[in-house]
Length: 456
Image 1: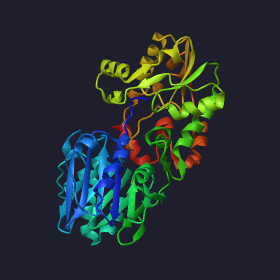
Image 2 (image 1 turned 90 degrees about the vertical axis):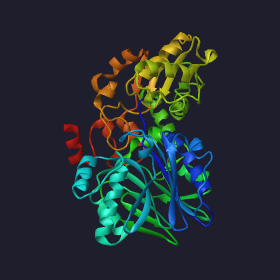
Image 3 (image 1 turned 180 degrees about the vertical axis):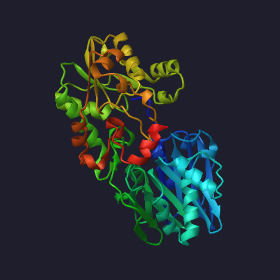
Image 4 (image 1 turned 45 degrees about the vertical axis):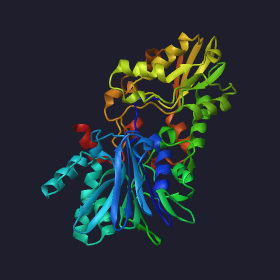
């Protein structure tokens, strides 16, 4: 898997005990969603305390603790806005009606429009993040309506795009999920408190029992009691990539096991595109569960053909192609005894540029692989994403200009096959109309704003 990044994760908790440890471990379990920066904000002694910096959770909070029984946290991978501590989250907003901290997972598609509108009305921005736009809009609408929750509702009527929000306002945690439900957000509880998180694995890590997903368009307020408000209704459009790649396999999103989806994708691939081979191997870690499914569906034994160096950075953020190719060599190393003289089915979740896959296939051949048959658990990626995935230009996609046979030749595979769109939808188990499939078929849920973006 290569050339894709997901924008961020959030965690929020209100407890009868100090919450710093819970937020820390919640963020630690969500580190796969963002490794550029981390931050925690807590409410203590009638004020918001904040610590954030560039780096991994374990580095940012090595010598820092924050007191408080209410708080939120954030890890970031930037898709919009620059890489810098000023764009790290949470943000703390101070205004005439008090203060609040806010963290955001997702991406707006009407950012420029909203920023220009707010600047004309006197707002001053200190970052390039669309999270600050959301915060400034909530402030203005709170001042207009006189009520913070009504201010959020009013802001939701103006925001277009993906936004799962965690907010601390006084001693309350507020969860907000956009009306389309692009990015995930779940709610859990224990005998000590309540929490919200981008994925259920973070609830598991902090001894919270998953209760349910925050509904698309819902505002969930966690105080002395838990109250739910409806901010806005739209047609649901859950991001299919959450199930295919972004979420951890042990997470449950919208009542669906991510592990089961990926295993089903592998079984579907084995049925749709069978091949004679000696071993099924995965591109670790993204292809492992689908490879297990392919093995189960085909009867071909599964083996570890590639060993991953888990201490090397992500290849897709390296700016030059040569750096990416060298990065792949350091990151993945074939296991000679599993490779030499074998016909290999190599399974991964997707191909974007093709750079990484071409390099992996060459490595396998250099180590004596007899044949390399590539199977991809997601249909070809052809269109940009504007909802929080770092795939925002068509030029990135090898499948945008080449048919499957041409891609097969480009990457040097003996054969190449993708899961069909129908197979993907069936493996996820949600109706097609409840999924965002725009990066494959170009059918964007937010059509008017998307048309504006495509014309820029």
